[in-house]
Structures are given as structure tokens and as C-alpha cells.
Length: 201
Image (cartoon, rainbow, N blue to C red; front, side):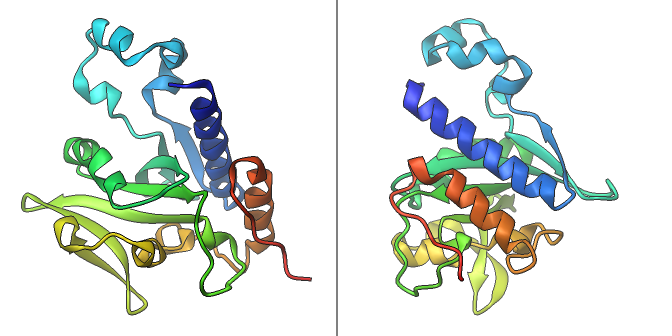
């Protein structure tokens, strides 16, 4: 992994962790690069030569538990300057191995056609799972979280805006109640965003 890409990955994961922990979630590192930190400096060829089981290379970044530790979600975090449907294909094997994950995305190049001036312009998420062998994505359709086959959705900016806001998968986190935290998080990422929202005065 290139140095700049590694920095963006680490920053994005750190911000997502901080947001969730601020909302009283327990966030546990589960990605192989965190379990075996030495692997983060290896190339794909060097890693493959070590002979680790395939499932280990697909471990999600975080296991996230609620405040009472009665439920958990497997969370994969991705930074993209050009976000699109292709990202779902990148994590397809991971979803197949683990059954269901939450994909949290930072879209550094997100436009703002609705002029919402909120952190959800850049930070969104979705559920991904296999159901009866069909690859499904959970997104917002008519203000409801709906599972639809990945193969049936179209790419484009509208797809990004149909992704869920973080509080729709993590109910301890509300965009209004935690708005200041979210704005601070996005501001902290200013160096890797093309533009950023400004807190309302």
C-alpha cells in the first residue's frame, strides 16, 4: 500500500472509531493489519507468501458493540476520492465470508447538490449481506432502510445519497445530537477532503 493511501486509511479508521466511541459504542480492532501490525508494511506479494488463510486477509476493520454489549456489528471502513458501486464488488468476498457487514465510507469527493451542509455529505454507510445466495445492500429508499440486490442498482451520485446516515445503523449516534462531534470529525479530515462543510453559526 502506498504511503499516502495508508495515511488516508489510518485517518479514516481513526475518525470512525472516535465518532462511535463518542456515542458510547465499544470499538474493537479486528483487521489483520491491527492484529499483526507488521503486515501493514508488506506488499501483497510478500503477504501472500506467508500463507495465511484467505479469511484472515478479509477480516473487517472493527467489531462494534452497543453500550450494553448485547449486540455487535462487523464494520469495514473505506476511504474513496471517487466513490461508486465498484466498492461493493471490492468487499463482496468479505461479505460472503462473514455473512453480513456494515460498510462505512468516507467519500472525499462528494458533491452537495442539496446544500445540506452536514457531515453526512462525506460519511455514510450501508449494510451488505448475502441472502439466499443474492448479494444485497441496505440503503435508504423513500426514507426507509431497504435491502435490494446489488446487481439491480445503478451507479451515480444518487447511489451515494441513498446510502444510510451513520445513526441509521448505529442508533446511539444521532446526526443532530452528535452534530458537533461529526463536524469536528470531518474538519479533522480536511487535508484529505476536496472540500468540507462549515458548522452553522
